[in-house]
Length: 404
Ligand SMILES: Nc1ncnc2c1ncn2[C@@H]1O[C@H](COP(=O)(O)OP(=O)(O)OP(=O)(O)O)[C@@H](O)[C@H]1O
Image (cartoon, rainbow, N blue to C red):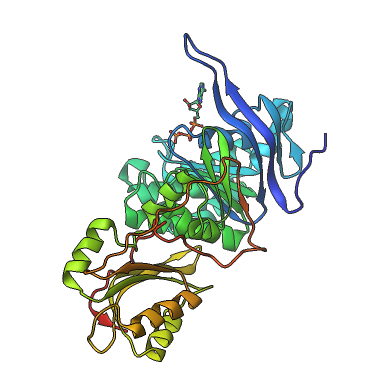
């Protein structure tokens, strides 16, 4: 049965639900609860949520390891609803999967592991040998062909997992917490490899994660899941810069830490008597060049006292906290007031006041809705962080005492 999909979608959920029946005295579990979502061909799509949100069940619906209780899942044009095992087989062949615990066969060498799906698919020995060599070159493990998994590091094991998942040329790669067991540096390498899989091989990658830093690093778009539902959906940059739901804000706060906490602000105020402001830096609104220009225009000195600029979806993003003074005078000098107004015209500004006259940040507004909010790239408003909404973070370098 043809199902409604958006053109360009390679995976489409329509009111998809998976309800596990009650066990013992427990209630039934709505692991996936009415999800409508399109994952576009060629993108790296993130699904983020806390433990139990339903992420794994959602991806298991894609490779038909689970079937929907209601609603539909369409993968590469095939509606999976009610398909026989025989009809599901070719769909599964178009999907590779990697796992947190790698799931390698310990009794087989690296070559044996990568060759396994080719054996199952009936490839000849010669073609298998050639394909394995090609894949090990791609993942950078040509020198480990004859090694057993027990002799590999976590990152190397995941590279084998990726090579194995790619063996039969899938169109889709599902990565279920693929970096959760890895240290930060190895995570970085594996995420870089997933980007190459996407860019060089044109494979759609679906990343399941509970780490917003993973979304920040590689995902083009992201869906945030809570209690089986998609509660927020959109372009990764937009979701970072304007998170609408509390759960999303909490995730964003874990990945971006460029804004001073209340304790840091208190320390800054003891060290700096001038006006403390936090200005947003991104590629849409305020670049640091704008900020420098405004301060120069008003004859105000800005000393960077805190901050960090990182990348979200490969675009600059972050904030700088500055101490503003005019002629070494007070932070409430009229020139400083004018500079703050000038900064507001070019970027987001949170005015923390001065040590003598501190201003409390306005808390972020409560979430507006529990419905998923699609934040489309095409009609992006200028990203605006809310005053004091302040999740922000992961400074690529904390800075102190630099005059602008
Ligand atoms: N086979 C099953 N039978 C019963 N309940 C299940 C089954 N699989 C998952 N669940 C329940 O469905 C809910 C969603 O689980 P799921 O594993 O999809 O979440 P998740 O977001 O991937 O969490 P985690 O990151 O911990 O794996 C949980 O409450 C879980 O206990």
